[in-house]
Image 1 (cartoon, one colour):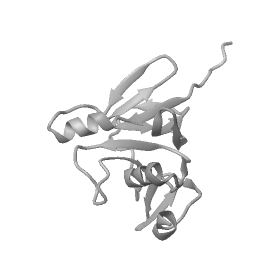
Image 2 (image 1 turned 30 degrees about the horizontal axis):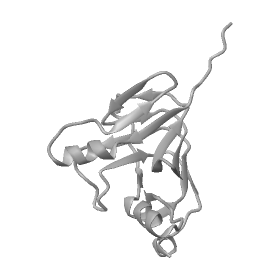
Image 3 (image 1 turned 120 degrees about the vertical axis):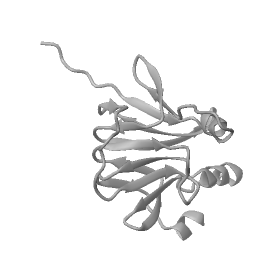
Length: 162
């Protein structure tokens, strides 16, 4: 009997494609990298646990989502309940690069409140969304989930900006 091996999938947001779409193009914004393949999509459903990751190294600052759960490009009717939204805070990334501080780069909107964290673990299904429009805060691509989440180094706006 063959063992089922689960591989880690990374999902990146293409800032270049987002910028092109602002100029009227219609490019997919999510790059999905698996063990042996890459594909592009506008929306991605993650059918299990995932984690938002941020790293800064010689290649620059990057944020992505990691999961070993099943990935689906069919996102219809996945979320019916109150939705938690998670997105990358580009302003914090720019401020960190400028002054070498370590502000949290993930913004979490949950139950009417906004929190900030350095890492976010999603404990169930979620979906990545890009619609061509933006949220009130300016985010153009984001993650939606009704699953429980764990925020690592969680803080308020004033704590995040200090």
